[in-house]
Length: 307
Image (cartoon, rainbow, N blue to C red; front, side, top):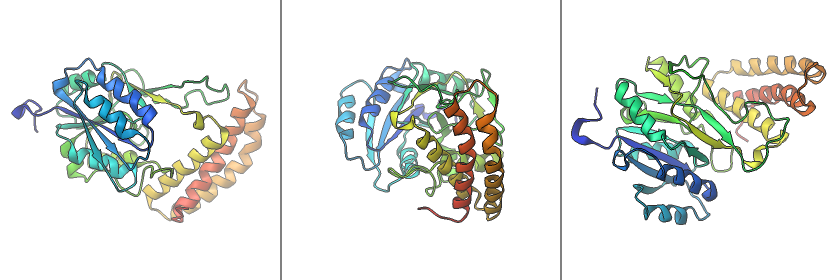
């Protein structure tokens, strides 16, 4: 076991992967600049994944501050490529990922360091995220949409049921090296929607009996972008989330599962529309169509259809 005190190595490398979101990136970097932790224990690496906006200009602005920040460019398009490039370039013993449209709470790095001090044996951990939006959220949105909260107590995760988010997750760099990081056939690729790269890695780690912890004090806020506030976006997201699950499973039986859930969902749709609850009608419609959309994604993913 390597202690972070040995050789006085840098403790944490914060990785921000970005693609054409300079406006939200600025808010993210501003939150990392305002951390209460001593600046000597962490660095920030921004991995630019072929942005064509003013991302580089935003990064140069922050290099003039006391924040230790490095720009790395990854030409292979895809979030998994960018995340892998981040940990490979990291100088820290631990690698902390945060999305470019997320804002770290002021004690985020300090809470990470505190957990490492009290749990040096843990190699993978993360925390919750809350949502924020510059505009009022529609009343029909699912109540917990855009959030992740696994409770108020620190716990060892059973990854069959509970998952950490790639927007708030920390790995010991040695573990990423050992398991070759993230699978590059998963995760967002430019404007193309795919998910699941961090989940797939967590599944592999759990199979090898690596401990994965949830730490409620390590918190970030994640943007709910305006483009995601439509019924169409939510259904499209459900489709590609299940598509990604099938890619992870790599199991032809997913085709049969998808067909079964599709038939079941079609029969259940009238129930969702007519159920006697006070939920907005549009929310009921979403819950009904979500199962259908997810089933279609599972079927398509099982057939290897990436179009």
